[in-house]
Image (cartoon, rainbow, N blue to C red; front, side, top):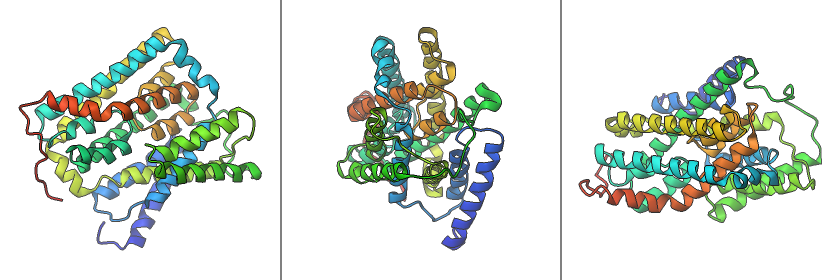
Length: 359
């Protein structure tokens, strides 16, 4: 693939993504326009493709996604968290402990250098974990591989669970999709909110700020009736595709070869965490008035953006899902560095300095 000129690589990426994405949509797979491009991106990245999604496009896509999430949020989002805070806290703490145990096992029983296993097993905040990992002695390349490998697994599993749970209703919204609706001033207002969040987020150094700021600002406008956000389907499809490509193309051949020795341990860690979170989802359904799919997406250890895309394509309680995912993201960002240092200190027999590895 690397022998092809960039124009040809882009053309292959685009055409293959369109074919796979719309093929998945025909079978009512939720988030088909995320999964298709993501899978194609992984295949091309591992085949040596040199094309990458420029960071500004990824940031803009997250901002658009933030506006989409904002349409489903209101002050009522806090109600389920406050009303059942002991159970919510239990689920949150259990997830963090499970990820900590997973990280300790990776440090203790794999060849991952230093605290890489601790950072890579963090259940969320992938981009922030990658950005911070290098400053704490971890191999940022392997952390990125582990984080996005988990996102790939979680996104695929969540889409499959949604498809099985909802049958032919999966992948459908509450009404027939209108790809090119009439646009008015609200569309340009929505773009302004997305642009402001995309510009401010990185500059204020807010983790996932390009998604969080438009989500918060847009929810405030939307919930108060100041402005109804307008995010057309064609714009969402473009954002989904760019996010899928950004994640998929990170799976480059050099990083894969570097991770190959510890790939089995990584996979066991990821699948184990996913199964544990599935158990927590079942627990939520026993005590709260939520369906299993809503609980599953709320507890899935994936990226906030990918879970939001899948939730939007399924008939679930979007507010509950986003409330749980957002709370966990903030908790992980606050506790991640301390937890990584703590579980690394619990493994004194392991060499804590990163081992030399080829680029």
